[in-house]
Image (cartoon, one colour):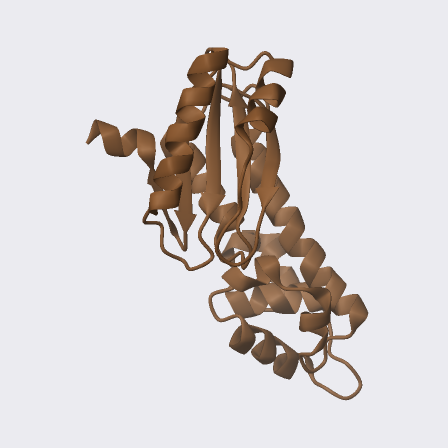
Length: 215
C-alpha cells in the first residue's frame, strides 16, 4: 500500500519514518530513485530529531534532494513544530512545569545554539505571551532581567518561566544556571513578578528548578 493511500485509510500516524519521508517527497529525481533519497535522509537523521535544525543547504547535500524537496522537508518540520507549540503554549492555556518542560524539549532539543525564552503567565498560570530573550553560541546565552521584566510588566504578567537549552544534550544545571535563577528571582521580587520556574532543556530531558525544590 502506498503511503498516501495508507494516510487516507489510517491516518499519517500509521506510517513508518520511511513512509512519512516518501509521502513528503513524492517521487525521485531523474538521477536518484526515491528509495535511495529516503534512505539517505534517514541515514543522515536516524532519530529525525536533527531535522528540526537542519539547514536547507545541508539537506540539499543529500542525494536526490534539490532545492524544492529540501524546502518541502524543512517546511513540513516547521509546520509540525508550530502545531505542537500552539497546542501547548497557546494564549489562555494554563500550564505546569511538566507540560512546559515537555513542550520545550520538543522545540529546543537538538539545537546547536543556546537560546533563552521567557514565557509570561497570568495569575491563573495561563500563558499570555512568549519571547526569545537571548541567543548565544555553543555553550552560553545571557538574558538581561531588565528586558524580561519590562516585557512582563507591559503584558501585566504575574509570573515568568525562563527556559534555555544546553546544546551539549545534558539537562543538568550549571553554576551559571544557578546564578541566573537567583538573579531573576531577586529581580522579580523587586518588581512584583514571580519567577515561577527555570527550565533547562538537554536532549530529551529537562530540569525544573521549581520541581527540584519540591522533591
